[in-house]
Image 1 (cartoon, rainbow, N blue to C red):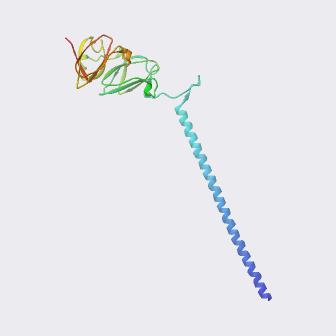
Image 2 (cartoon, one colour; image 1 turned 30 degrees about the horizontal axis):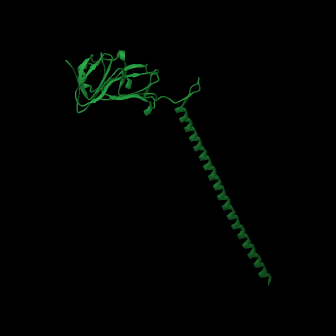
Image 3 (tube, helix red, strand yellow; image 1 turned 90 degrees about the vertical axis):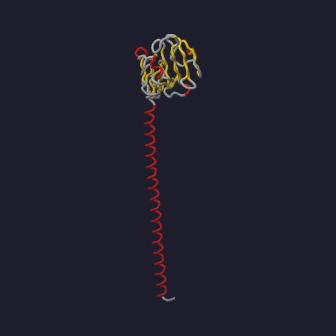
Length: 236
């Protein structure tokens, strides 16, 4: 083999080696770049996750502060009272109230808790114009389209206007005179109730009945007389 051929072979191997080194460097550079990008991406995701966790913790802390309170003296944890419910003994004194309304129908509910689950409800009713209730300390009173007036300050509802109040409760001796009356349904059916207290309890009920024909009743002073979809006339 001549010297020329040998030199050419050496140059050939040198060029191939240089190309190999260049390619190897490019590959290594790409791998390093990808690795750095992955690392930066993971760091960014971790940062975002930390921010989300902090936001969630802050939100939960805010909700917790809004929904519970701790009594400083006793350390007792309590939930706030529903703003729509009046706590008797704090917002209103206990006693008998006349509820009055300018709306065609109104509503009241007396319950043992502000949430008023079914088992906590002591009394509730839909009425027209006015009715009577009795509340005790610790009760929660919810009113819709109605105002509560203490019994000794309550206005008198004249018996002459009873035909315009077909779903109401009267105090005998104040709104209507004691005596004998006939009650008859305004339509096919009506309802009449006489009680010794303005609270919906079986022990206080003197008469409670749906009627489909006229009935005669006797009202005594101090009783509460309720009618629904009915009218009454004084017996002569």
